[in-house]
Image (cartoon, rainbow, N blue to C red; front, side, top):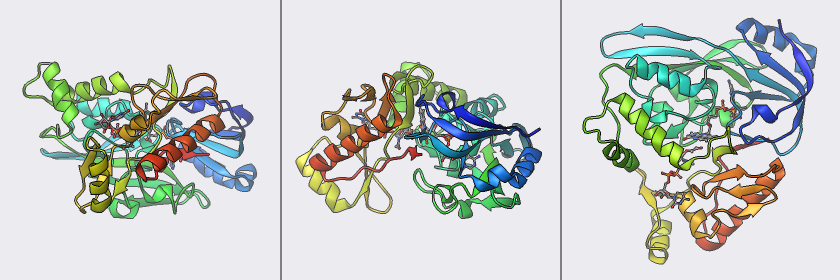
Length: 339
Ligand code: FAD
Ligand code: EPU
């Protein structure tokens, strides 16, 4: 039975742990709930915000509208042969639990994405990625309800327009579709991906010579736990900025000036710069502002160190952008969704 609550504190629903209120709040536990919701007069008249785990959001003020929390659960094996399996996961499944489920069943492809917070439904939103893998590589299709009509639509990979931390749902279709499930194509003959240098170093430290997907997952978890803050302890939303892409010319110019600059060549001839390195080199590691801070172990992450407000975190991010711009002539773009 659909229950629309009023004036709800969102502190427990965002991993930054920011205390803000929304006018209305509703949890969707079944497809019927969503169909009831689209007919509801309060819903129709309000601005809408979908949330999963709230791990990629920064609330800078109270939300004057309705927050829709996706709780749809369930994992189905749609199809399976000796090489591959198609798995459909409902949007409210916790991402890391889904990863562990797949590892346990020996379905390979998302083990490098272990321990990313949040829910399955948000994973296509910014094409989550880590340690050499992005979900677009294992994505088959998703289903989403039109937020106005309630009609269910399927999106294939092309229609999602995936890019680095990008998809059509972050722009044209933001809050236009309520993603209800995502189907992934996973491999049964595991070929592990250890292309990201830190994984090999960690596997060596773990004394593992021929790793399986469980080992890769463990290595990724170890690396993440060594530098990323646990949101249960310290409020954050992971990387606050994207790693910027620059032209070959700009990269060479920077390389002449900063010989240790960390950058990765891209197929299009451009370079992706490690924003965390630039923030650190700008002298900002550990910098604090009204309870918000630049994380000391990973400067790309901003944290809620001591009861910060969303606007404090945002203002700190503006300061970071300015300092990096002044030193490197590169403009950082926020990765986190600012509400
Ligand atoms: P939310 O924060 O709830 O929502 C994010 C956005 O998606 C919002 O705009 C929301 O409106 C929209 N949305 C959510 N659910 C739906 C839905 N069902 N339908 C339509 N729109 C929806 N990200 C990475 O890519 N790689 C990382 O390595 C990584 N590491 C992280 C580490 C930490 C410690 C933290 C806190 C975050 C990290 N993140 C990382 C960011 C975050 O975990 C991911 O972006 C994750 O997919 C967000 O999921 P969520 O359910 O919490 O989304
Ligand atoms: N670095 C520094 N100082 C710092 C931070 C990083 O010098 O304070 C250097 C590192 O030494 C390394 C390089 O920058 O040489 C890259 O650092 P890291 O491997 O930690 O990855 P990242 O580029 O900072 C990206 C993603 C992460 C993802 C990791 C692993 C983005 C915006 N961030 O971070 O995603 O987990 O790679 O693949 O692309 C997220 O999106 O929330 C997130 C955590």
